[in-house]
Image 1 (cartoon, rainbow, N blue to C red):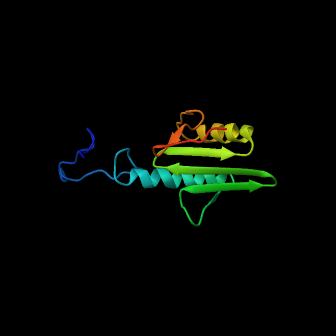
Image 2 (cartoon, helix red, strand yellow):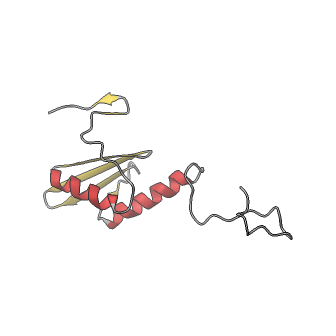
Image 3 (cartoon, rainbow, N blue to C red):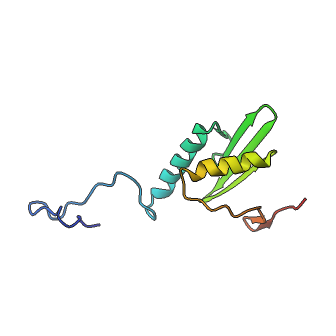
Length: 114
C-alpha cells in the first residue's frame, strides 16, 4: 500500500495509510461484511441462531422467515412469498444484491421441487 499522491510526507516517506473500513479482498473484509449484514438483519427484527451463526430467523404470529448465509450467498425462505420479496427489497436498500430466483441447488445438492 502506498500513500496517496499529495499526502506523501518527506519526513515519513514509509508511513502507510490507516483504513477506516474494509476493502474487498482483504482478510478482514468478509468478517466486516458479515457483521454489517448481521446488524442489518437484527435491525429488521431477525435473531441469530445460537446453534449456527449463519442462520437468522424471524417469527411473528403465523409468519416464519429463515435466512441462511453462506459466504456471500443468501437463501431466504418463508411461509409467505410476499414477505420474501419485502425482505429482499429492504436488504437491497443497504446492499448491492441480485435476486437469482428460486433455489435450484445449494452446495452441489439439487433442491427439492414441489
